[in-house]
Image (cartoon, rainbow, N blue to C red):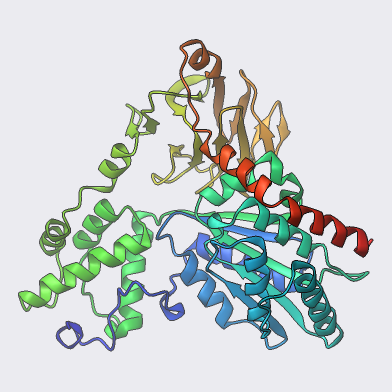
Length: 431
């Protein structure tokens, strides 16, 4: 509609995952490099997570367009599947019609196909998008498939991508065997203010704007304030602002037009959205969870002086340098997304998110570790004192965790007992 007015060849802010519009921020470039490594290093999984709208699907599409010719690809994005349906979907990607076949026969077809392709000098890559929807049983099938190998290398290369719930699911003790095979793990966060400016300019340039300025600096600042650096939200707001400009026949978008678009969308500032979801900022500018049922808390210290506090509820809290993190530590020694803490009813687990300077507990660098009350986590020049509050919650007869997920898993276990027996038979036969 507005392309002619702005002298563009195509709309710059469409929501479809077009690889040519991929903006290679440092974190997106790093995630893509991790995915590319699977083509050459077939010795484990790569897991990419990111919040809704962070650009995971666009990143995957860009990666897939650059695959070499010797790669046979299976790309699965419809993930609300049973184990048998998952195996059928995989075979469909390979060109088979595997319907009305028993599970053992499906597994045999997959193995035979992989061995045949390996002998022909081909590499097989499985990419699973929206993997947060996979059940534990399906994830177990993925693990079993990853065990198919020759004397020198695996027959299947695997990339798993999904929303942050995927990380929480993979951290379950019941998926420990799967997690031991994860070689690289990366979380995509929101763009910084500077990156948001660059992102807007990049998409306009790809759409035909060249070096022309369509969004001025003040307009980009307002976009960041309301979209929070989330690419999908940036697209929605910028597209609406361009429609507002079209209605007024204006070829340059200023802060006023972006605010008019905000009113059309009935948005509030991104920080207000976070606050509405149980986050707030303390006097240091750090986001503080306002949960009524805290499981634990972190006391943030710099040079042994308390500078902030964060309460942990069920789920994941990301620690890093940028404001988009749950716990922001503005220090040059802290990576953009440095570490995360995943909490449930029983414990909190600290995980390093491939940071540059690492995470230390008792002077020992750790990759992943369950936290104990009183643990001090060293991140750069800052210390995080961990205080477990679960006993206090129990004493107050509070229930900090919804056990529905565990009930669902027990129900799923009962329904799939026969499939477990088949899995065991298959493994035994392979031995």
